[in-house]
Image (cartoon, rainbow, N blue to C red):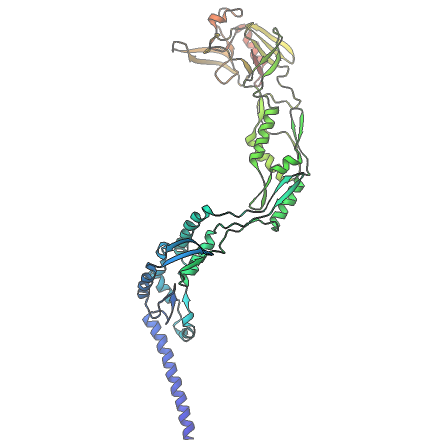
Length: 462
């Protein structure tokens, strides 16, 4: 009985001793405010150290620590850990790590102490510092490296030909940053980046690639038609196919190619820059160069509109956005309502629905470079009553002429108006007494001219 009693007392005494040690160590870690024994940060043993002591150790250990980035056997870059500007050495950050320790769990820590390590302070500052360093390294390295290429397709021989994706060896900044972080946390001096390549985002097996190709094939089977000035232009499957392309795995259009197509179409059918063959009243058929009158496709507005319609994949039948004047869906140009100004004969006719409604002698500009009435197919783009025309004489003096009727036709200030100051019209009077470029019209005729033309009426001057 005595022996058993002694054993029991011994066990109790041992348990009390162990309990005292457990409590004592817990109280020690709590009051001493230190890291558990053998704790490692970035490969540096800071066990038993306060935050301030650990900061000193880390700063000293990392001050001259060199890290080398390796891609296989090739060295990509070398840098000092201080270049990463890590906040891991700050007392505040380290104290936060100590505060996270559970002092009462120290026995568990003892069994794994040699393998224990605490990761870098996962603050935004640390993340951004390492990311900035990684970006600096990868930007320089990638200049001489090969970029990955996404899978793509192009329209050839009446079908879409697929080009498979290719792997490159350019480095991914985010992946390199993660590798640098892991190396520092583990106290390694070599950072392996052979798995940190930028991979193709789109492959031939990607769902987005397959969807885009199927949609592209369907688009080329739709009918896309432009109705343009009595012409019908059907976009070929080849044209549509050549516009379709992939961007970030999504089907889109090459707007530069669409713009070029519309520009060519505008030059082919538009009239704004074309010389006209005109059947004049007195001089037979004459050629008159382009002026303000005429139309073209508004390529800037039509390009995104056409792109949207193509991607919708439902076909189209439309007239493109037109700019300028004189567009007629039936293909006519000047038409049968216009103003004709014959400078040689110093005469003006106003035609309305094919009939002459006004016929009058006029005075055009002095036949000099400065004041001649410009030849061209112009347009009445405004009508005004009782206004003052202002300009400069050859001697530099200014003039102000009041007129009752004003119809500008070009973009330099030339127009048709009454001229009470002219004593006569027609003949050769204009050679010495011509206007500053405008078509001077007898006061007795100008009201009829004004009444029989509207804004948009073409004016042929030759």
